Length: 81
Image (cartoon, rainbow, N blue to C red; front, side, top):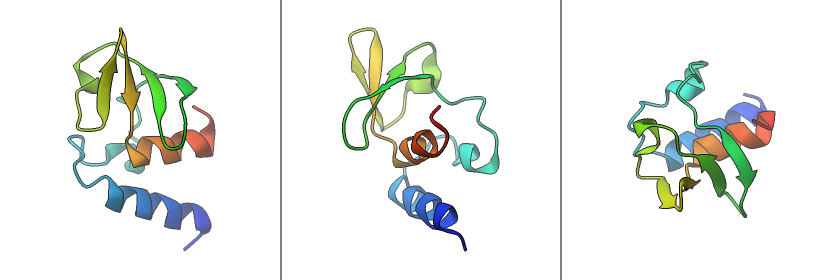
């Protein structure tokens, strides 16, 4: 198991409350929110465009969201997107 795999597995375990069944880890990333900026340790500022943002990890902030999903943060740090 590579370091990347280990990090993603840990993030998945932390994100047990995923309404999308962790599809982003299967390469199905079409539902991922667009990241506007990193907003601190494990927090992303994301574009709030549809109901897909409504998760236990998305907190409304003005017209956008603060995302605390460990998997989304891990994918962002890995790819920059």
